[in-house]
Image 1 (spheres, helix red, strand yellow):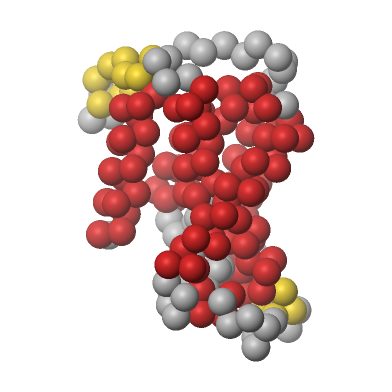
Image 2 (tube, one colour):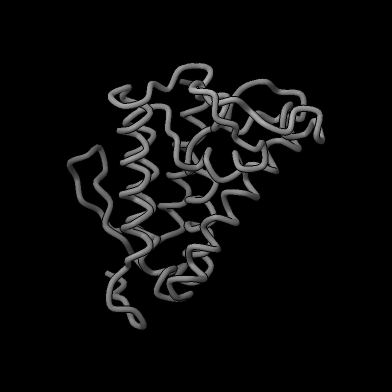
Length: 189
């Protein structure tokens, strides 16, 4: 219920969603390239490797190509652990991204999205610098989009399907709370 004012269509938001889905199909279904441990290690942020400070500057992709470790701060955003992980992130990007893209313009929006994801990967690595567990998903970038939406449009009401059946209108702040709860629930799964 928050119409676009400055742009005609949310091209970048749609392109990000399509790119995330394409990467999921390419890597995570295994139809083209399987997302095994080697490929995950090549494209995910692994804090211990990232924080090593040059001792392991590249990760080796399964087919022998080299991926610079710093590149993982971009590539990890496009990998997702499951369809539910992908759909959750893309749903929130679809609902909130268009208005942020409208407020910022196309180019600044894509830069903001990528910077939010990079910052999230760096913050995660800084908080767990010795972790060997791979970090994947667009949750950090989407969190930045949601935070920007709450700052710009805190009182705007959005439609939410409670229990996937009951439509209710909530302010963006409540939707942000549900998204945060979903992120903590993903940690338990």
